Amino acid sequence: MDIVKSLSSYAIPAIFLVVLSVGLYRGVKVYDVFIEGAKEGITTVVKIIPPLVGLIVAIGVFRASGALDLLIYAVRPVTKIFNIPSETLPLVFMRPISGSASLALVSDILKEHGPDSFIGRVTSTLMGSTETIFYTLAVYFGAVGIKKVRYTLAAALIADFISVIVSVWICRIVFS
Amino acid sequence: MLNYIWIGMLIGGIITGIINGRIDEVTKAIMTSSQNAIELSIGLLGVMCLWTGLMGIAEKSGIIKGIAKILRPVIKLLFPDVPKDHPATGAIVMNLVANFLGLGNAATPLGLKAMNELQKLNKKKDTATDSMSTFLVLNTSCIQFIPATIIAVRSATGSQNPTEVIGTIWIATICATTAGVIAAKLFSLAYAKKAC
Image (tube, rainbow over all chains, first blue to last red):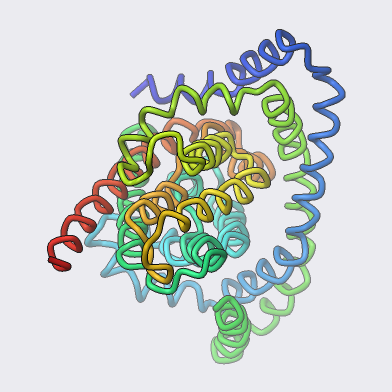
């Protein structure tokens, strides 16, 4: 599974090379455009600060009180069936509901267990491979006035579930 | 929904803390967590700025349009209901490419445009069509070439190798997208049979 590791190493330099070369070839003022785009990054981050503060405090309280351990203990029988680390299960449920709450959970898990631990890597893979299903469906269907979504939610949740199973499986193979 | 989850975590946590005799830990967590949130946000700034800056160049140099051209045949295969050269195709492709590059701000308006175009083709205005379902499944499980946010969080929390999960994320997403599309197609067949 070395190929997965080298994919990870080459992805960022490769995209820099491609984007910059195409930009140069098309005569884009690359540096100026870069600065303009980077400003957008600041706005994005600043916008998520208030929800992050609220949610990280809530998760911090939940963990410090011992409630999170109770929850993880309670879900252990379920996670055992699918061979998922119990510590990641809160994220599995939060992910389809809220992006910022998931981000807060991820940062909490990575801090607690370390980003380079097995739990940390599974958490990262999970976060990167799933989306906020309910929000996306609400926005897109809401915008055009669709009330009956038929099988959309079911299919999206199936994709989400597969992503959870594969995340754990692939991390076991690649990082051990 | 987030209202309930948030208040549930706080009240549940505080009550559990009282029962467990860990109220000092809870107090400490309240104070340090708010600080942690700011530290995380500052940690995110570097990678996020770098990424949105680079993607700004990608947008300006027409890379999105380039990839969109390559993807068109695939889109035709996935959306058989959409007529050839209908504006919906363009909007769908552009939205998926924006998602692929992690351009959240560009993806949403393009996605809404795609939904509007698909709605024009819809005969029952309050019911989702097969194309809409497929489109949203693709949107909620779309592969991201560089998952910038998670890389930023990993580097903010002190990872030795923040990008090492790119490969595993790709594999997990490809499997999820495939499963989602197959599920949507099977459901649509089942629904079509029921309607007959």
